[in-house]
Length: 295
DNA sequence: TCCCAGGACTACT
DNA sequence: AGTAGTCCTGGG
Image 1 (tube, rainbow, N blue to C red):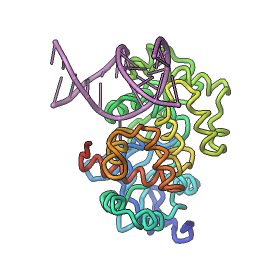
Image 2 (spheres, rainbow, N blue to C red; image 1 turned 90 degrees about the vertical axis):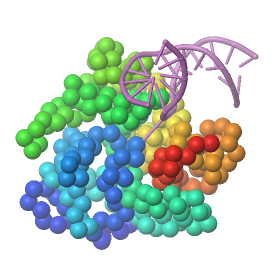
Image 3 (tube, helix red, strand yellow; image 1 turned 30 degrees about the horizontal axis):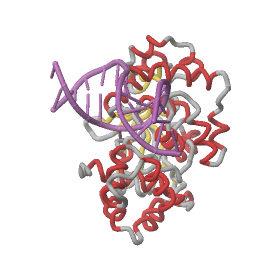
Image 4 (cartoon, helix red, strand yellow; image 1 turned 45 degrees about the vertical axis):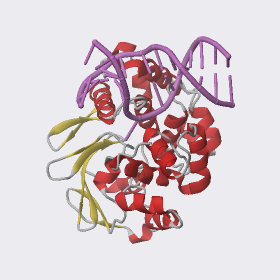
């Protein structure tokens, strides 16, 4: 599973650069619904803010360039892009005896699961409930620019996603201004519980998935699906299988009956795809959206 | 004007 | 345990 030895840090004056990256397509990875703060530029590069770091990323000749990335952050970015996981091997395993996944993987072979910051991921996916991607992006951007810390990069000002302590002190109307709607009180209450240490995401992250999931859904605004997203996208739980409407459709279409419950789909996905359920879910999700699969 | 969208909550059987 | 009705918001 570890191909970190193949990865090398190439000298690059304006930032850092990883040579020989495999199984990575920035568009597929940044626009598959797991993250909401990367913005594509005209030249195809992406600018984003990750854990307080504003950078520009692009791939050239098989190398990933992170303009603005600091050399001392090599491990941070290696972890963020999940470079210690061998996606080729996982794709091979998932394709075996599964024609649906084989096709789905061909449609999004450059998708990687990013390792994101737990608190930002938690709030972001509370916002995702019954919401569309452009609206989620807009709310997260507003929360950051109104309440985050400014970061200068390439002559422009970007903003970090605010800490729990900051969000916990806001008023409901502050979040309404960000377009959070009925989720505003959920964001506030969950931020307060985290800021006060009643819920410790770093501790939840260490728990086995079942226990961690149980802890997460105790928080306001977090149900089964949102908890699974937090586990998969920020807590290294690749066995999590978030079932949203697209995954529901693709699973009902290819694997199950058209009327099975969300819980059954989740159980089936985790059972069938095991340790790689979350990665399988991303390929299937992407495939369902591209092909507008409906049951 | 009505309807729905990448769910969760609450209040019911 | 499992299921309806309701919820901000904005785009079709």
